[in-house]
Amino acid sequence: MDERKSDHLKPVPPSLRSAIRRARVESAEQSEAVADLREAEVVRLELLLEAIRPVLDQAPEGLELFDPGIAHGERPRLFLDMISFVDLGHDRRTYRFFQDTRHGRVLIAESPLIERIVAAMTNYIARRLVEREQALASDWRSKDEAVSGAKASARALRLTGAARAKDAASPPVDAAAAGVAPGGRGWLAAIGDVFSFLLLTLGSIAFLTLACLGAYLAWSAWGRALWTAQFGAPPI
Image (cartoon, rainbow, N blue to C red; front, side):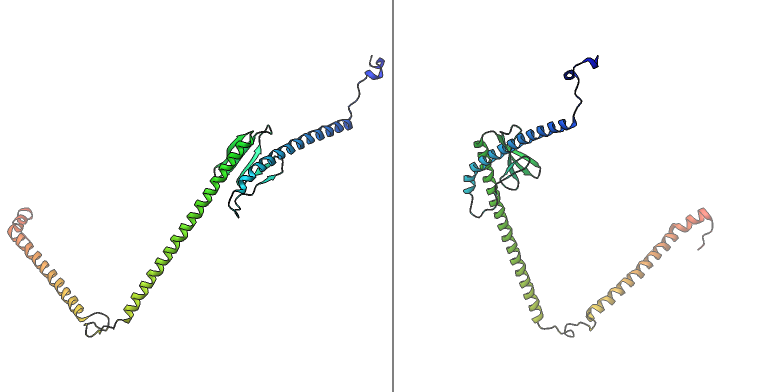
């Protein structure tokens, strides 16, 4: 029955070239759509940059803390400084203001209104300026403390040097007049050592004598009788 069908009713075999051509057309259309979305995001970020520019112009002159600029990539971003940026959400209309911290990325503000994002960025700029002032003040205090410590150390060194110079300038003491032996010790100290040795020797002898006398008296009083009762005739 298939042979009896007309030619326009017969199935057409698939063509790889036609499929590739269709895939290229679809990819081009998607690329154009993505490019249009990215261009729209860049335009929104440029509007935000123009809105925040007057606030940045009020910062102190010569301050290099803020350097705004748009990074053109897969997801365009408006960087305010090295640690904060603004991008658009998945709807390509909502602004999201982020800050990178030591504990991760923090969402500071999120709104489709430029005014709210500009207010959040202004508050952020003010906080960064205050943090910079506090850091500079801390550095000045550290420098003052270091200078004070250096001055105190130098003063202590000067006093120590003066004391040493005074000791060096004092007249030497006559060793013979002070009774100091050439070896560095006086003859009075040597006599004291000999006397101490004699006292220790005599004390030891007296202690041994008293101990022996006490032992003899105890033996004579009850030790001999106890020995005789227990063991028989005493040895002495």
